[in-house]
Amino acid sequence: MNRLLTETNISRRSLLMGGMGLGAFAVLGLAGCSNEGRGGGALTGNATVALPTYVPYGGVPMDIKGTDGVPDTMLKYPASPQKVTEGTIGDGKDIGIFGMTNTPVPPGADKNAYWQELHERLGFALTIALTPAGDFSDRFQTTVAGDRLPDIFEMFPGDVPGLPSLLEERATDLTEFLSGDAVKKYPFLANIPTESWQSCVYNGKIFAVPVPRGPAQSMVFYARQDWFEAEGIDPNVTSAEEFYDLCKDLSGGNTWALGRVPLGHLRQMYEIPNGWSEDGGKLTSANLHERQQEALELGRRLVADGFVHPDGVPATQPQRKTWLVNGTIRMLDDTFSAWPDFSNYPIDENFRLAVAAPPLAEGGGTAGIHLGAPVQNITSISKKSEGRVEALLSLVNYLAAPFGSEEHLFRTYGVEGVHHELDGTDPVLTDQGRTEIQLGLKYVVEGPWVNFQAGDPDVAQAEHDAQAAVVPTAVRNPVQGLFSDTASRKGGQLGEKLASVEGDILAGRKPVTAWADAAAAWAKGGGDTIRDEYQTALADRQG
Image 1: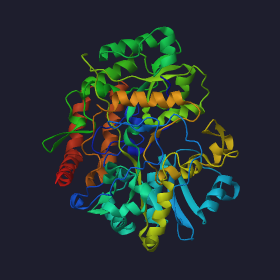
Image 2: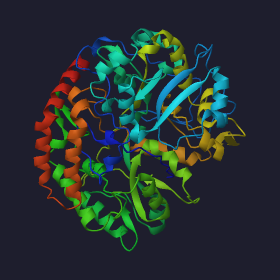
Image 3: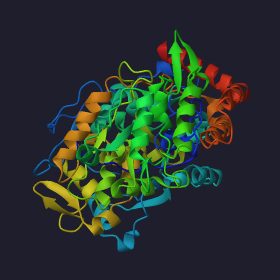
């Protein structure tokens, strides 16, 4: 299988607000799109609001139609994409956006041909204040405190203390415009699956538009398939002990099996829940699961016995990817949504990656991966701009134009001959395109995820095949899309304390038994309150 990956950002939202604490050694320390503590459920009233009617867009036939939760896949970009939006976008007045980026900030509008062409097509100017995703939450709080939110603003809900109150004060209530069939006025917002909208409902009102990702944000475990095949080694093991033995066989000299401890992968082997488990409406945190210490002990052994790159903790994920490309490590964890990024690395034509499913620790089958959050972030309209709400929603609808449309082609790949060249019908970015188009528009809104890799259909096919193998049996987080006020206010601090103990265990500075006391302190310090708030929100959602 060919595999390509992208970047996921590291920020304090990587600390699961109510689920597992995360340390620097751990796989989930890169949980770039964790949705713990996000979404609808400001305790009461959300069950009464009608979520936007889901009307899938069928104007662009998919090469492989996804089933059982697997996204659609396109092997080639459609030839001659057609314009799909109608009418005037906006109201002729300039629009401001407070947004995030995971890439270097592009040249300003006066030196950016893509930005200028976007203004020409829209008929007005977009002023975009871009902030690196790792700094975004702190900058968001500062912008709110200074009362400087522009017309449209993005947020990671789990990072916003007292989010429902903030939205009531600063965001426009979109219920009238998006609830039920009203959303059909904006057909590309209606194309967003229902599940994603749960993260936009607070106090019984729709306050935001989601950026959907489906299962693409699920963390999975990648192996250098080309190398394994050349050596005649199978990366798919049948137990936790076989995994240890494989890592031992792959390590030696200046080569290590792992770029960091894939603790999420290990926890899946021991069937530790995805954040929370639910039984009859009662929730239990994964932090308190009886097999946590077994997963941590395996991780500790991997570090102590030299199977993890010694610089894995301070390294960034791009550094680890470089190690994977140059053969310094053989395996690495990342998300499905991460696949395109390896095309930006110096890979040769033989470079291939495969997804290895987690085995049950004692053998006897395969464990389920943890299904990622369906939403990357959410986007609201400022209450100061509520008089322009329909104009602003028309822009958001335009930016959500589906894969294969003329609007999507321009938004993602810019102008042919300037920002991309065609490889057959596939748009392949030029150096100018890679620099100029990074305006962060995909974090304002986006249509449903589609597996696609320009110029390499084998990658898209492999992405589909890997997802089809693990997504249907993936383990969901039962609090996904719910909100806990305590998690929003204290979850990060509680998670950081737990993560510190986790890191000390993996590094051998504390015994594995230290986890039990740390998890109990987490529960007493606020975890039990988070659980109770989630249970109330869950009961409200279930009616």
